[in-house]
Amino acid sequence: MVHDLYILMITAGVVSLLFKLLKQPVVLGYIVAGILVGPHLLGHDLVSHENVEAWGNIGVLFVLFCIGLEFRLKNLFQSGKVAVVGAATIILGMLVLGYGVGRFALLDNMNSLFLASMLCMSSTTIVMKAIDEAGLSKARFVKGATSILIFEDIVAVVLLVLLSSIAVKNSFEGVELLKKIGVLAVTLAVWFICGILIIPTFLRKVRPYLNDETLIILALGLCLGMVLTAEEAGFSSALGAFVMGMVLAETLESHRIEHLMAPLKNVFAAIFFVSVGMMINPASLVEYWMPILFVSIVIIIGMILFGTLGCWWGGETLKDAMSTGFSFVQIGEFSFIIAALGSKLGVTDPAIYPIIVAASVLTTFLTPYIMKATVPCYNFLYNHASQRLKAKIDNREQQVELAEQNTSTKSENTLQAHADKMQHLLKHTIITKRVVKLFFENMSEHDKHQEN
View 1 (spheres, rainbow, N blue to C red):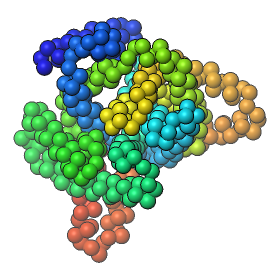
View 2 (view 1 turned 30 degrees about the horizontal axis):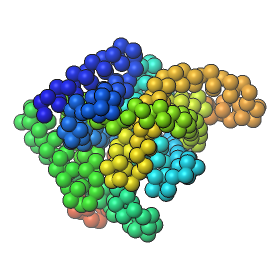
View 3 (view 1 turned 90 degrees about the vertical axis):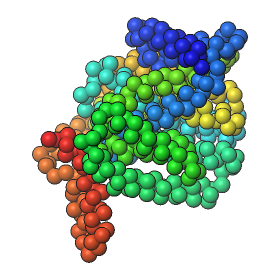
View 4 (view 1 turned 120 degrees about the vertical axis):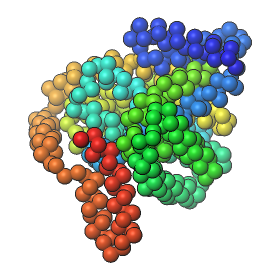
């Protein structure tokens, strides 16, 4: 095991350093490292695939836990229409497009459904990194783009649960699927509400005794406890890790936990991406170069189209909508997880996995260059638009600027306003009123601390 870990770490370290020098995402370096140590390139295993897969599964949990830690309900409330409409347009549009591509390629329903699910999620990690490296972190579109990515992450976790259920039963029973969604929604609500009522209060009480060591052990214990709870309830372990991250995101210790989790997440996430690379046969990339190119084009065009339309319909300016769409032109970690799930359950064609991973690598590589084309494409579209469309574009720009000015003058906290309304509706029920009050106090304590 130590030998495996040594080979894994030194190869991933050297290759990722090379990719860093070439100014490429280190995720691509990890995948290439996986190809180098995998069984296909040299004809034999340099490391045990079972060990790497076990470590990679832990990496998935830590990645989803940390994504949950970055989740803020307040951000979704503030973005509102943009997050919901934008994410719904992208996800539904890419699901339909991806399913159509699968059927066009003569894949059966199950393979087409898994393929569609792999194509409908942009990579939060890669998008935010590309935005940061382009110097656009403070740009106006970033807030909406971040909210859409968070919403996509939530839907991706739900998709994992539903795909697992569908794959195990190998059927598309509509009524049973609706029941599963209903049970999942209720379970999520109960877990989240109970977590918000108990955990932030508990951490607030023991805060004087929490040093870094105690806090990270406690956070990991809570995470793994929720993972086991999710598995016992018949859901995926990924769901449990994500939910606990969401709960801890509403505590005063959230940023501290994020900071402490970063090294663990980076190590195990790297191992996960290496395990992805180990499943790729370089010969298959040559064999399937045409499907890889075709899928990459579908991803780029689909994400630009649905991302732009979704953000425009959600109320953003055309320039901001196009900036979001042009930055979402890749697939990433959730696509790998879904692809791995399909392979593990034996319900997807073996050719899909290398095609998806190769398409992800190609689109990730092209993302910075496509983002640079946003402004020229916007100028071309605006200059060739009809007078009526130009008027709509200019009017939307004025509306957004006015809304930003009005928002900056508001001092009322959104969550507190919701709390007051619910408390007013429940004023005759003392116990329920107290529970609601405690819930919103815990939800907003993180933001109050930040403001101070």
